[in-house]
Structures are given as structure tokens and as C-alpha cells.
Length: 469
Image (cartoon, rainbow, N blue to C red; front, side, top):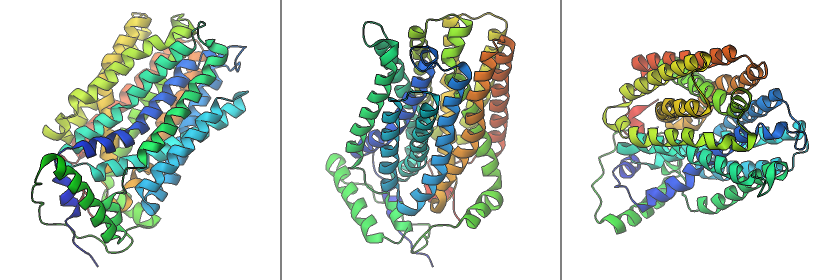
């Protein structure tokens, strides 16, 4: 039994408004928090090796990063299923609370085991955030700008990265708190930021598309009417929505695990292969480099541990500017061309940087500039992976699909990479580290070639048109 509705068309025809900005800011901060966490661990890695802090070794620093990723994988799978079942809003409040409590506890770590437990719990919250947030954003943002908005939101990760670098640079300064107590203050401030975000998120509505899927038509109508009234007050009369072209299941739209497996492995098999490879490649590249960046700087370039954060700012700049400047092309030139181009160029740039690092041609500054150039493109590619996972599968399983592919990519590329690179760096062999970078380059090139063949032309199309059961 199906029931047609014009709600998707009414949401997609809305002009961009202050209401959309509020939603994007309230939900997009998930990536700011993730960037803050990743950069704090990357910046504090060498600090946590000091005998007057936690006295970790390089391998333990790498494992701290991997356990954070392991928690994110578990959180994505757990909370992703609940997001499809219980709703987007309920879960993006719960996952943020989990993150807040876990990062608060991290500040009180007394040794590696407690730190590892806290990092795993923090990852649980962040992994759940990815599923709940990506689902909600795509279902609330108009189709014509979905690509650029999604990419820019994902790029806000690097606002968090810059914030984490700045916090560590200032707080670790001996004239402030210094390394012994400063690392704890960094995590405390992350918890304070999360608490403030919870207050903002209270005003974001449930996804009308999710409500409609679960048979709650009247509630969906009230929410959409309220949004339309607010947007009309700003822009005047709204465009007439298109007639509904897609039926929707009445009642619960939840799919069981067998049905989800059928959609992923049979109905949309090529899409699944492409998204999995995109996720693995971007997760390996990012987590390999950033979780252990401070160790590379201190071991190979003798950068003082309280100056490591300075070298993260060029990274952050390239990563923010990439999606900002390239994002609109995903809606105009199209998904297929841009996804393939960004992955291929990322792989080529990473391979060139690996060669220069191995040959000893780079110092700490030029390495940072090389990474800035590489990740100008790689940031758009990574954001495109999350965009693709969230729009090319049916609404009934959207959050779960995001979770599954996040888990595949992050569980393989993300979990393995920090521990692997921690081990490679601890060995002190520059050639081995360069080989790790080359592996990341090969993964990116493979993902680009796969996207060239299988990417979906989803630009300017409603979600219901991109993927149907």
C-alpha cells in the first residue's frame, strides 16, 4: 500500500533562508566536534608521551586514535539503526550527549587504559552523529543545493581542526597552563562546546520525510507548514511545488536486516561497491596522516611538541577551502565528474608527496604546504563520500546505509591506519612511512576509477528520484 505526498516537493522547492542556515549550523557542528577530537589527539600525541603526563609511547598514541575510530564504527552501526527506527532528532540529541560525557571523562584520564576507554566512548558518540546528521541534513535541504551544502558542512570538520590546533597551541604554552595540565583543559573545553550545541539543536525539527515514512502524516504536515510560513515571511510567496511523482509506504517504513542486505548486495550492488571503496580510501588517508602527524613532525623534523599545532593550520586552510570553492561544481558539472576528478587528483598528489618525503626533499613547513595542496582536493573527495552514501540509497534505510559504509570505510581504513602508522613511525624508517602514504594514494586512485564508472548522477534530483525500492 502506498500513499502519495507532496511533502518532498514542498521541501525541495523552498528558497534558501535563515531557517536553512539555522539547521545547517545546528547540525553541521558534528563535524566541528570530530575535527576538534582528531586534531587534539594529533596535536597532543607527543605531549602524552611525556613522563610528567601519561607517559605513553608512540604505539599507544596510535592505538588511542584507532580505538576512537573503533568506537565510531560501533556507534555508527548502533545508532544508525536506531536513527531509522526512532527518528533523526531523538538520535542527534542522544549521540551529542554521549560525546559530551565521554570527552569530559577523557580530561580525567590517569593512564593508557582509562584514556583508551574514554576515546572509544567518544567515538561512539561521533559515529552516531554521522548517521543521524547526514540523514537529517539531506532530508531537509533543497535538492538543487544538496551537493554543495553537504560538502561545505563536511568541510566544517576543519574548523574544528583549526580550533583544536589553536586550543592546544595556546593552552600548552608554558605561560598558560603548560603541557602537564593543558592537555586536560583542551578536552574540558570540547565538552563545554558540546553542551552549548545541545541547546541550539533543541529547535531543529524532526525530518518530515521520516515522519511521513512512519505514517505520521499530520505531524509532518504541521512541521512543513511551519517551515513554509517562516520562509514565506522572509521571501514572500513560495513557488508552487511539483505534483508528487513518488509513492510512499504507509505506516512503518523500516526494513529488516535481510531486506537491507538485499538492497545493498543485489538491488544496488554497484553503488555499494563504489561507496565502500570511497569510504575506505578517504578514511585511510585522513586517519593515517592526521592521527600521527605530530609524531612525524617531532620524530623526523624535530619540531617541539608545543609547536606542532602551528603546522596544522595550513592543513585546515586547504581542507576548508576545497569544498567551499569546489562544492558548487558537484551540483553543476555533476557528481560523476567531480567525484572521479577529486579522488584521482588526491591520489596523484599524495603519491607525489610520499616520493618527496621519502627522498628527503621536504622540511616541516614544505611538508605542511604539500598536505595543504593535497587535501584541498581530498577534502572535497572525502565529503563527496558522505554525500554519496547519504543520497543513493532509499529513505527507509538511509541512516543504516550511512552507518554501514561509514563502518566499512572507517573500520578498515580508519582503524588500521593510525595503529599502522604509529608502528611505522616508532620504527624510525622514513621509507616505511612513505610506503604507507603510497598505499593511501593507490586507494584514492582506485576509488576515483570506480566512481568514474558507477557514480550516480544525483545532482538537482529529489532523494525519492535518486533511490527507490
